[in-house]
Length: 386
Image (cartoon, rainbow, N blue to C red; front, top):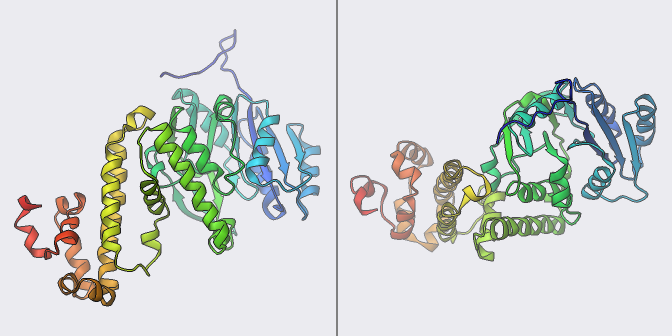
């Protein structure tokens, strides 16, 4: 698809209205900076809709102040706390723009963000455009970059925080799912990417995402019931993505395995018992199933998907080998023969893994060790038997 530049009768490039939604709840600390990062855009044909989700701090006077200063600002006040997805939907229901985006009360647009996003969504003929961005700390100091191509949505929320999409995308998807609080964005993108042309640009300085010591996400992990709900929501969204959008026919067990990979359970939990080898074999089988999916049917590049899956597989395989040594005492009870083979100093192990042939690491032949308890050295000279 070519570009979608539109010109008026004089041949002048038209400047479509962009609707920016800024929901806030008790966000007075950084709200001024967030609002000003919107108002000081080089692209000026936008409206800013502030949605106050029943704040109890000093948010209201800040909103009043800026709404009096700039006629492009409109304000919605929720009479009760409705949470983020419902607040977004209320804001977009009022939106008049041809293009939509939203931001948070503690994050910042760069001055040219809307212009760059608009130029690229038009020049690529895309329905959705998104950019890399960078993190900042609570003092505003620049931290690491976040980026990911569309194919990486299997294992992370790649669209992230800096994006622009056509009004029709929101309308056809029916907005954000209010039952998916805390993952409303990931759910939205899992529904959007299979249906709409999506393009990525690597401009990390367009947007600053503030990291907090005690964020909503970090507090979520400490609340057992909320965390279980969070994971259940991911399960349901991935199930729709794989089985309705991709017709992959994955079982519930396979979907649950994928959720484990998405959350990197095996990376974050060092207290796994050593049914771990069986678990890794299940992951390997799932990776092989995913490689057979018709990714091209939803506009994704199969070669890039294959690399994404391969990278995740390599990470899991190398990690499980580390864990086999980490918990060698546990392994001795489960599988003494394998434990004896792996009973080496960790420093030796790391050295050995780094010099493994590329074909061994990338093709996941460690599975053969796990299945047959073969020693490391025996496989190097006998590649044909793998």
